[in-house]
Image (tube, rainbow over all chains, first blue to last red; front, side):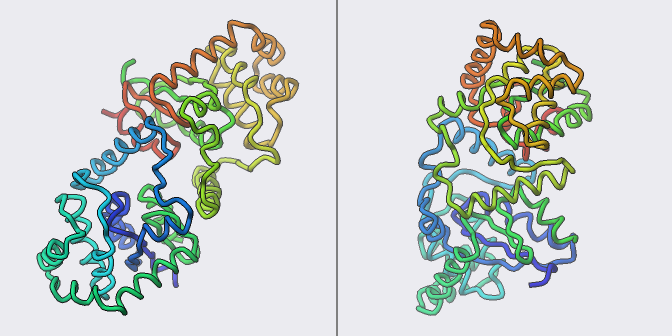
Length: 196
Length: 196
């Protein structure tokens, strides 16, 4: 991969990946680079790292700070964000739809991120996913159908395995060449890497 | 506290607190604010939070990323930083000296941060601490002597208890009024808070 590309690894379940998803295209464009949207299953990554719930052992004081911190990023970037009534939702269907969207993975991702993190919708529900995708100009019903195909399931599993093999441990994770960056709060480093 | 001040809570044992310590004065100055240097014992804070070693359960992939990330901050800020041969060192003596330095806490902190993180010196050794402070224009021997006084010990314990009571769970931690910010990577938020 040339440095004219940044890989953006994400799962719509992650609010930090949502926040970063609203900025990454602008960061890349400023460097004349393009974004390669890389869906993965965050749960699979976390299980592989032995941290199925990385927040499980978090002190209450840190959890309080992190909840505030998340909203500070939303505010500084003017991004609509609210913690859904239920979280985490199962996103395996949603992420399979992103895989199925192929060249339009970005549009699918944005639609599903917005459904989850701006609109508080239940993206584990196929009809919710189909509608969100259709509203974004994609063929939601067709994507949901293709999400059920074995090839799509295998592709998401292979992508997740690739993430694990390359050292991913959370989301969002960005690669510029071999260099890995974790977190929406590291976009400045990504911008510098793309400018080199 | 008026918004014309930022409290900077730190322990010289923490490389992120070191990194932030090289930037906080400039951040405050840009907003016409002043820094209140607040020594604490990080070990006491972590024990109180039930996370005596917050990195204990960290996946290897995350630890590798974090080590790289630390050096990226050092590079972007042109700060000399190398992981000492031995880490963590006991910093209770060093932090008592910062307390004893009173109005010159900043100068003491900077000298001891540099000894630990730029020069790889053993700040658990009283003669090392005394020399570092003297080299920075302080009276190192007098400060080490005062570090042994009960009033100094009590003051560091009280400061640590205050940090715990106010929700601190790591270092560096900054307060602008009641708003708490954690990490050298949140100086942008601190700058915005001071500008409001």
